[in-house]
Image (cartoon, rainbow, N blue to C red; front, side):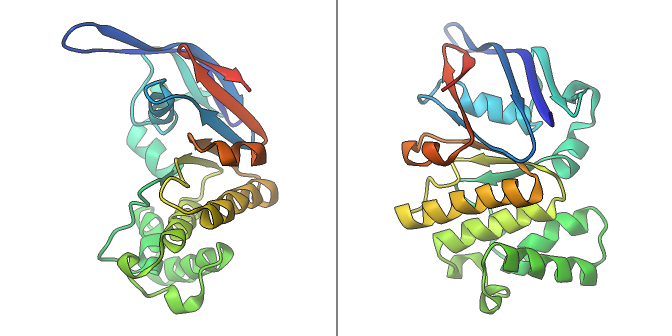
Length: 221
């Protein structure tokens, strides 16, 4: 088990009342599989993602990476070295080329520029980006291409835990299918654990395990 949620509780206060978002969430995630977390807007999907990504900590219970609670880790290091996140809006750096975007997380970890460039080009090839697009800026790429660059950047994080926040939300049906198939291939061939938070019902049948967020807990679909 690479990631576990144990009795996770999380709430927040509004101006008028307290909202109990997570009420004792338990779930386990293994390498080599693609998971989905689905649920209505406001059901707690984004909160679960934030906890798994190390953006925040549970108020009670634990999020464990390979048995170690995130509460005992340096969260900045966790976010940099232990988990990769893919976003609906791609979040590519607009003034960097595709290859530079993929190089960026490696350079943060101290990888020398020449080696980072070589590896970045390989990651872009792995996700199906043609070499003619390596040195183009994000604004000149299609939505599907931008999301594949974002996946290549996630590969460059050198972690086996990949979180995807609505990765097909800004894509048409054809590109959505390409992205989900790519994530499935990464899980199967490279032993990644991929966790997709989505409301896209069309992708659910392609996932290995689907959790539904209901009344503050995760229930297997």
